[in-house]
Image 1 (tube, helix red, strand yellow):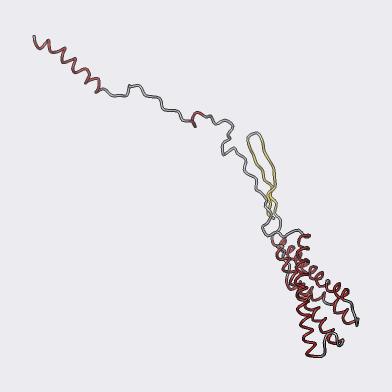
Image 2: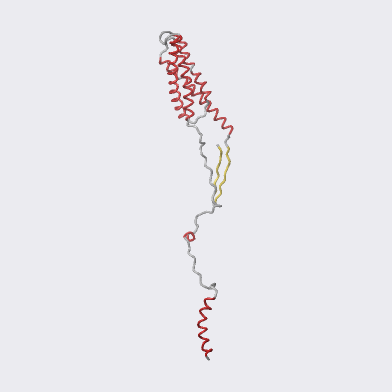
Length: 226
């Protein structure tokens, strides 16, 4: 009798344990939190495969020289300043040498001519050096030897004035001293042009057609090497 009465009590105690021992597969799962990136639909963003390739940008070469006008200003200023300095130094040197060798600058013609000839050569050398320096600072590629030869050729004008005239005025001499600057600039720019032509022959311009495709559109272009 007692065993029949204890059965309901035992079943009551065992039911919670049996319920806990069952697998949790049928238990309801909590929904996962939705992040902000999942909430935003990717609308209007083309896939990387559908994006058109970026067209190449043409940049000017880093060693491109300044325009011709700017170069001429720099070459003229450099040639005039350094040329005048060379003229002054060599003129004073010629005066000192003429005093020791023959006679003073104002005493005889030979002394005067010696001073002016040395000044002309100094002007030609200084003008060529100043023009080359000014042009190089402007990223030009003229040659020093052609510029030097141009400056020395320009000294023919003041030398001719000294040789043909006994009493040439300083105004005439000053005008003729500007000739070496002009001839130096001409020689420098000619040698710079020859360098540019050689570089273009070594690195010719190459143009290649390009095509860019995108969903619903397309583009044509040219890519080149300069």
